[in-house]
Image 1 (cartoon, helix red, strand yellow):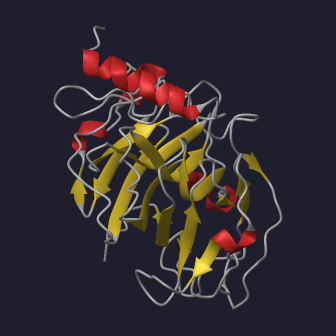
Image 2: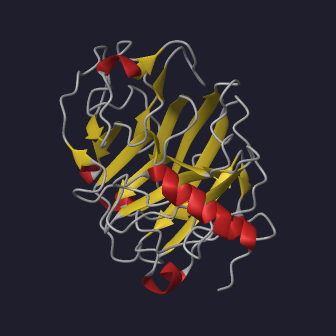
Image 3: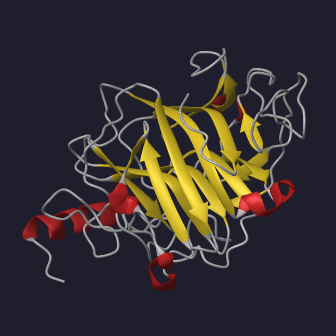
Length: 308
């Protein structure tokens, strides 16, 4: 593959900036075949990570960490009472600053002090609470939930989450000429399947993509969206038997990142046994300022949940 001069410059800049971070060897959506922006503004698998990063042992996240359960009444191990789906989390029954009952910490390589993430009341999609993360360091701690109680639904389901990103206007995350890869939802199977995944360009536009920690798969969309400070509804459909993945944003499908027939095995969906769900933002290169993001109203079900 021939790289343009601009792509070579971007590749060098991104690789130099990371400085040996354990997850991504280059800024997400960099300029290689594994993560590069093409002339049309779209990108192939957008992450430029080194093999074994992300959720792999020694390359980013490990399960565990102490978790403060957040009070209030819940049903079914952390699911809000009255949940109409196989799994729900709206954070309403969790104390501010805590994490929900039934969830634990997914510790990244830069562990958060406890004051920097947890349930918050400053923003909410529905109700009065959401889960907030603020950091200027890559490799954030996330929260995780075991999926064993879902049975077959863990491997064939529809998922939905609302997310919101607020950038510091003085130091926007894409302002220094790099691409920034930010994951909001991951599922642990053969590897981490990043099912709600974004890359921000230096122009502060974003693409969506299905991505793996080693960037061996897959394609990215055009850079047609942005972190605009609004709540957005992200939906995904995953089926390990059909080896398929679909993604929707605000009700509209992003067909360019759909996976069918496992991309000849590269997507690592077929024969996966998804055991954990990871929730909350994590990014892989140093930004020019802190990133604050919220997630809310997570749901997983056998049929499409929708954005209502």
